[in-house]
Amino acid sequence: MLARLRRIEWATVLSSAALVAIGTLMLSTSADPEADWLSGRAAQQAALGAAGLAAALALAQVDYRLLRGLALPMFGLGLGALALVLLVGDASLGARRWFNVGPIVIQPSELMKLAVIVFFAKFLAERGEAIRSLKTVWLSLGIMLVPMGLIFLEPDLGTALVFAAIWLAMVFAAGARWWHLLTPVVIALAAFPFGWFFAQDYMRERFVTFFDPSNDPLGAGYNVLQARISIGSGGWLGQGIGQGTQSQNEFLRVRDTDFIFAMLGEQLGLAGTLGVVGFFTLLVVQAVFIGLRARDQFGRLLAVGAATMLFVQSFVNIGMNVGLTPVTGITLPLVSFGRNSLLVTLLTIGVLLSVHAHRSAAPYRRHGIFLAGPLTPPRSHGALGR
Image (cartoon, rainbow, N blue to C red; front, side, top):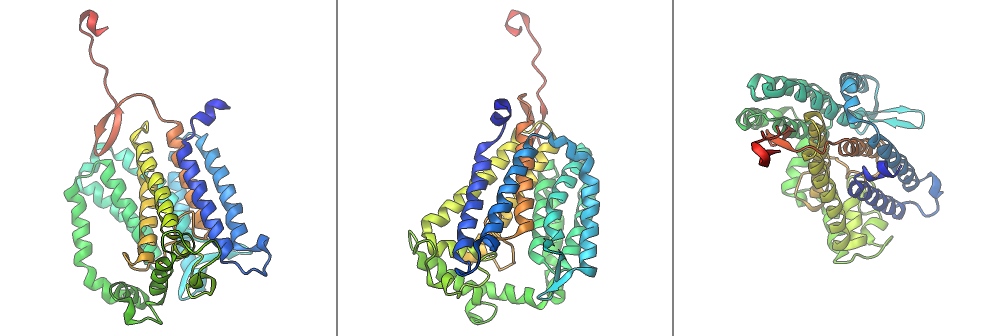
């Protein structure tokens, strides 16, 4: 038992638990004081967070290499769910992103994140040196465009861009030539004017609002302006738990999900926001180190995918709260309310813990930007070489 506990990467576990706890605390301050706490979002977040952390610790005991056999079924089922939600999913605010199965809400795009990371870790690891060819890079991009396209049709541009970032990071870490990756980036930039023409109206509004939210202060720019006011009013140490005119008087909308960071800034101030940023930084850095110490390419790429997912989602969400990135609807991992997002993030962290727990102690040589395999021991030369 003690040996198993020693194999756990506790900095990652404690950082994750701290972020879940902070999110639960914020959700409890935004709840209706007359409502039953046990049926509220804070209680759901706490229960799912505890269950997710327990699942992550359990996953740490399972060899991550078993996921190789599940990669294709996970990817195939995920694609099926993404296609099905477009046909029979529940429509809300002009989008079809969820299934409501009784009290359970299923969001296929969230579940697909872990499936994509596992699938591409297997796909790229099996390609070996072939990843350095343009053909393999384009093949991997073509595969990734299928889930991205289905998610874009929901429509959910923000999540589709997260998938693009995961693909780019994993292919680069696998050893692809950087100029091969530059080609699709250049094509995407060149296609921007055409994308603007076919984009949904809300996508155009968010892009324009990013540059000048005051242009529509009561419409598209409202949430961005209120988020800035909330964070600014928090000062150094905040107005206190459960305090703050913006969040408590509901001037700050969507405060449980997209703009929970702004509510946190109002109540806990700069100190609180820096603490959250610090926990996310620790999570991402630990994920990178886990990748560096992994025993094989499959494990390394799993860590790269997990690190990219955590970094991009936290960076974009915090950025849109402070006006550095456009509003995309991406929640803050582990902190924002979101049943599917919370569980998938914690399961992904469980995979990270498994990669760490089953790492090899042997030294590795460099391949791509990560480490690929054990060094060949030096030949002995006489007594000094023994």
